[in-house]
Length: 316
Image (cartoon, rainbow, N blue to C red):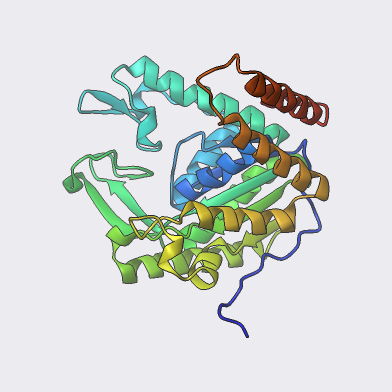
């Protein structure tokens, strides 16, 4: 007797190996997945523009990473005595123009270099809504808590969505290794501030646009992350206290299903052991000279050394 509808991720013919490089961009859910990949000691780079949500802004970021197009002073604005890029997350804001530019352009340089070596791309869209900054008539990725009167909010059209996704794929296929695998997901985080009906419309437009766009390309795939939380884990016990963001248990469940479909057996074993080591490293003691603790750390160091011998890149 079944008491839930389970959503499966189709098994991939291409597998993520322990030396593969994984680039991710998009919503905060992309960051949560990357955190788990990093704990598993895989090579990752996440969100060189910070957390961004809509396909238009994500495409703009990918295009600038592709071209290694640095930002200039005239592209920034000032608000609350900080220098701001409306294409970036607030984490790039500083009180000094050279510091903001250094953070932005340093991330572009690192992102461009990583993309040239990337084997896998994960793009997570969060919303079809976008804001236009009226003083500059510019579509933006983040409003930086600037008063609402300076912006106009609207839904991206289907043409704008598909065009953004299509161009992102072209840029990634051009800069990345031949045969790069591009995985698209829709964030399960509901944007309740848009309204519940509006959020559902926003998500459905994303799903439609992704499926239409990736049908034109090989090596592009859709991961049903949104569907897993909505249909498989359709219970508020799988959400955080805000009833919007997925709980740690839910994120781990999705990551496990993703791993079974996309990780090679070697990668699965590698990550599983690294998760155990990460957990053991959290163990603290008030007496570091305790013989039992010393023995515990010696054995743990031996396990880490075994893992280090499996890869060429630096871990732990």
